[in-house]
Amino acid sequence: MSKKPVRVAVTGAAGQIGYALLFRIASGEMLGKDQPVILQLLEIPDEKAQKALKGVIMELEDCAFPLLAGVIPTGDPLVAFKDADYALLVGARPRGPGMERADLLAANAQIFTAQGKALDQVASRKVKVLVVGNPANTNAYIAMKSAPSLPRKNFTAMLRLDHNRAASQIAAKTGTAVGDIEKLTVWGNHSPTMYADYRFATVGGKSVKDLINDQVWNADTFLPTVGKRGAAIIEARGLSSAASAANAAIDHMRDWALGSNGKWVTMGIPSDGQYGIPKDVIFGFPVTTENGEYKLVEGLEIDKFSQERIDKTLKELQDEQAGVAHLL
Ligand SMILES: NC(=O)C1=CN([C@@H]2O[C@H](COP(=O)(O)OP(=O)(O)OC[C@H]3O[C@@H](n4cnc5c(N)ncnc54)[C@H](O)[C@@H]3O)[C@@H](O)[C@H]2O)C=CC1
Ligand SMILES: O=C([O-])CC(=O)C(=O)O
Image (cartoon, protein in one colour):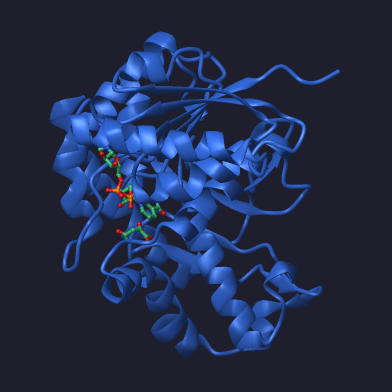
């Protein structure tokens, strides 16, 4: 017997990430090839955005996806999040050349307060929320704080693009296949302060750190390349990453929903105090996922270099939190 459809809310559905994301969700790449979905698509209640959304829906219809059990376009968060099982909060203003993601804080904080409240009111109590819109960690924090009746653990931010970028750089450096890299993680904020950490990583069972054996490359090439990749893409494309961001969102949600089979993945999750990160800070951590739950990988040794990096990205997150405290 076929499964009951689940409700997937996507905000910013007519934007560039939305365009790279919806078709993959509807084809079953996110929740499985046997899981029907109802897409609940939020765009700003503006004529141009709603018209663009209609166009995207026409294309969804023209794909004749067997798993697409319904599409609900709306300009109202209370409609978009009604009984939502999954919510991908993509809609926000993206940055342009010369801006840092933190510059978007004020512009986007109000969106995530309103959407957190709407999720609180109408979403499934089990809703899995992924915040993609930047600054993603702090926006997830705002949404979580605005939704006090939902479990904190339901709110996550996207660090998976950073994780995937790091894996790709390591595969190129070591001449190995990206799919063979395991136990990689990215600590902290989705910003240039993030700390992509390959000290525990393996490829084909061998230590990545030993294979690379070059701390200067780590500090001076690898970390800046991964940390500034988003800016490099804006510089090259004139627009921020969209297909790779949508791909990372699919990876994040798929692993959360269907399990990572023991593999480490990186998710931005609310801290419970592990690794000295204060409670509630939405921080990139290594996790494994199983049965719809994520579990933090605990007990990893943090050396001096790593601690300095973690302190730096934590400080940035705490400064961002202080900047939005008056809104919460
Ligand atoms: N966490 C990550 O790794 C990444 C995050 N991003 C972020 O994702 C966000 C979206 O990027 P793009 O799709 O490229 O931008 P875009 O500008 O192409 O699309 C954003 C869409 O959101 C809509 N929107 C704005 N406010 C909204 C609201 N309150 N409710 C519903 N929809 C709303 C806009 O009308 C627009 O259609 C940006 O904040 C960007 O910085 C982008 C890449 C990676
Ligand atoms: O850099 C940006 O503004 C978009 C983004 O978050 C990324 O590509 O990592």
